[in-house]
Length: 184
Picture (cartoon, helix red, strand yellow):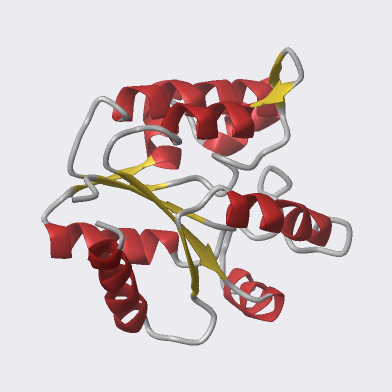
């Protein structure tokens, strides 16, 4: 049985909604890496990034990940860049690579990439009050490259890819449950 489930994908892919539904269905604890970083830092992500930079944010995110890996029966709502960001960690390794290496051989782990089309992301993020903040990768003209840059890494660093563009959260949940049963 998969006891450590990670939901990854770009902001707006549906990670928070599906993490909540999946945790309820499995009776697992839900952990949100962004919230845990905010709790640990004692301030919002926007402030961390603005005052101290992305590197500190990614370092805090990695510390949060290491702590939650001690748990079982968890559904992790991963920050969008947890396994795919390109901020340098050390020796040419990025935090994204380092974080993925922490979990790739973890017993009971299952990484789900929630894939959505660019048009669906634009629509969903247009309703997001944080969409235009500079500390969040937006899908503005220069930043759409982040979406396309991360896509191959999301796909490579996942056990299951779910196109979450055109279905309800409950339909997506059922597909995830089937994948969990098939991969057990």
